[in-house]
Image 1 (cartoon, rainbow, N blue to C red):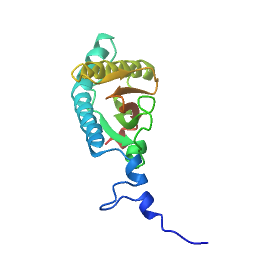
Image 2: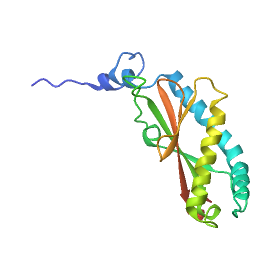
Image 3: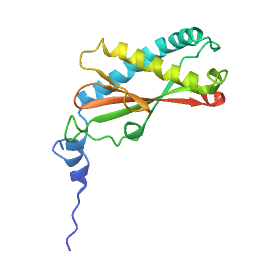
Length: 170
């Protein structure tokens, strides 16, 4: 049996534009769109969520001391560099998962369910407001595990919320 080198089938190197890997990968423009949107979303949430949550907590008569600026960590296929271009948009979309992390110490002063509900509501409201500034962006809130921003027919960003131990947040 004759052995064949199929490296060119999977790998894209110089002057190898029509390869399997290239055909299933996001274009540079698509990657740039996802990265720019991630930056916009992170910046907006980091600026808006702490003060908005502080206001909501006070309005509810709860006690919360200076909600901190959240941190973000990209996870999933984008982080592992295994994200493929969607074969059949809009049913299939490229997806970037960008978790928003908060310290437990910021929410453990009150019943966690009440703070969690206010947090989720605040994030959804802020992302909804942000989407109004970008004509192609749409918010999707049907998933109880995260809030989704559909950037266009081909891609979206999911923002799951996590509460982590205060020591890990530092």
